[in-house]
Length: 447
Image 1 (cartoon, rainbow, N blue to C red):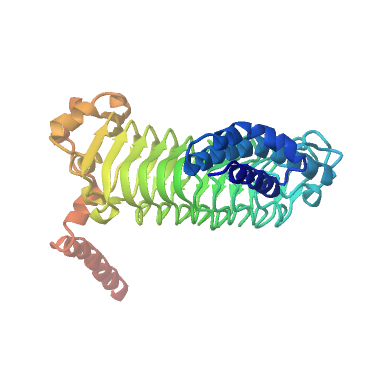
Image 2: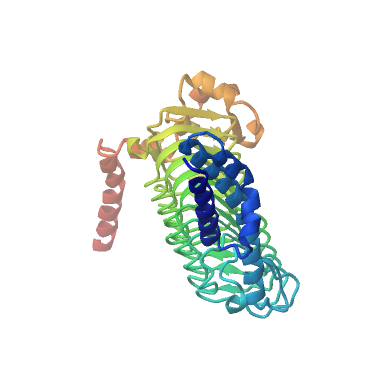
């Protein structure tokens, strides 16, 4: 290869590099960078080796030049946007609007390239529908410490890349229906330390990928039906203390939950169909609460639960406790509960569960004890069950192990005796005195 051809190769490469990179400097600068390549061309090496060397230098040149161009582009972008006076625009991707006294969200004034937006300690009471329209690449949104009293339906619609949303330390009184709808990729939702008193139905409709919901330190009193519909793949859902009402179907549509924890509730009853539609739960914990009456269909419709833990609760009455095979519950742990009134019949406890553990509970040790000892709570010998559970009544046996009571000396409750003998002539026995009474009454009137 002639020296003229080799020199022409370098000249062509230099001009092409300038053209594709958009570099505005002279070719002399680029030429100096490739002196080694030109020297290589002047030697007796083959053309292919020379081309490979030139390619390496081109890559090194690109790597060196690209960050400078990107930085210049970002600086130009920032200059093109007028940052709101109450905000600090650290870059086109990060904006801080903290303690600025904003009365509205300045969406139109923010760069559409923003990925992290902090709006804390401002004074906007309402988050309107589609409040962040246009900020399509927003990934993290913090709105703590604001005077927020209302979140309108679909307030965060269009934020398809948002993965973390924090609204904490606000006077927000409730979660309105569809408030957090259509948040397709949010994985962390922080709602702690607000004034949330209830959650309306379908508040999270279309929001299917939240991994963590934090609701601690809210005065939550009521959970409406279908409040958590559409939520799936939640790792932890831990409710605040003090819940007084859980409506039927409150958890309908909630699927694939790691831990669902309900503690320190003050319920009048665990209503029928409370857990209908809740499925694929690793651990459902109901603990340290006043459950009132467990109604007969409280767990009907609950399916695919690894562990159902009913722990350390006060229970006024168990109407019926049915866990069928179709519920697909692997383990029931019924521990440390104080049951004031047992089911009216042993068959009202039907536990078709793979593993049952009932220990450290307090049951009535009067005639009702027969209903407990003959029920599915006893997963083993009766004597072993009596050793591991205690009496709550009568008062002289309160707190003592059940095995200290001789239940053979205690008759079954009268209602059960009557119920067991229905259809065996008892009805006719009770009807006879009534017939004689009316006959004598008619005789007296006749004479």
